Length: 414
Image (cartoon, rainbow, N blue to C red; front, side, top):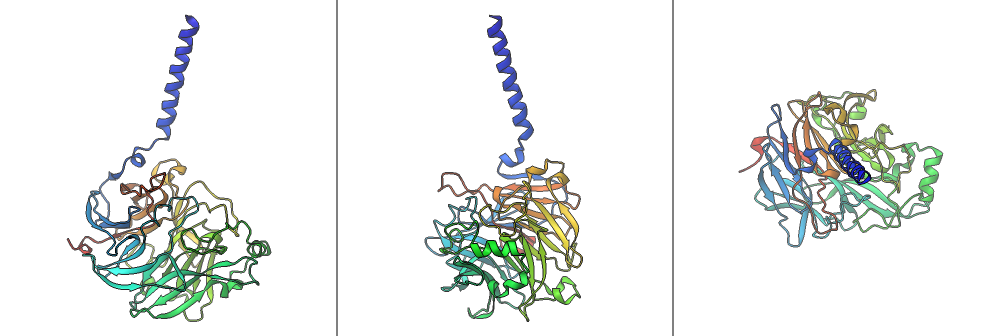
């Protein structure tokens, strides 16, 4: 009897210990969905994002859905959807099956059939489709009214690789759908100044999967993987000619590299190598926002294991960096410890975005976990929202959010 009583006490003690351990690692704000934190000091406005259920949403600071936008085209879903200054939305139109696999460990946002501009009442006022290139990851409306796209082509380039390359490009398209500027990554291979071991890995296609970018239909070696491109704004205030307005900041995830491309000469005039790991959404902050002229970027902290020619040990946590491009110093940094949480509790191994707010806060999209939150400069979380609109077609519900952006309250037409 004593032995059985002892066994019961040991079992009970083990259960209590297990519950304590679980409690220590549990964060209720992550387990819940919808708005989970709201404190004074949050920037007023609406958060816009495309959800994996195929719709785009506008969420107010109370976590309530103010508007929902389905795709205006039959048998399609909206992928990455971003608000425009004119009150319209720029959205990726994808087949209904494309988002269900987006939660895979190596997946990024899939290639689009087309990109549309639509009004808030769902009318399509502009559309671009490219039959030569795969449109993927990013599109941005420029100050001149044109649209900048990240894209790729499958190319045979024996001087660079023995494998077929999925080679990233940039195109600028005018309102009539005409390409007025184009930039191909492989044309500037030497400007990356790769060391010999990196060149050797690219030549061999080392670590490349059998297919190309997931969902894109390409079959090549996705050697560099551009995942963002953003023009330097007129109001960035930089006098260094490398950062003149119109030059393009581009992110290469598989190279842990951010570059600035001179729009006129098409040369790479600045680059950041291995300061970030598998980064997303670098862009230069304009006037009117704290940090004007600095580069704000989501530093994921890890790369897909299957093709990162520019190797660097990963971190099991993400961070946000504000980089002074003139001297490469870190002007501001956020990780979970700034919010008095374990450093590993903020981590998205892919996708994600960051946006500085007029009041000095920073809106962060922890994409892999479908979590959007806003922090003060000191790191206090004043607002948090966990995506309640999953895609349920796969074996595991997909709640990922590629990017999120906050707009002013007067942007939304109610």
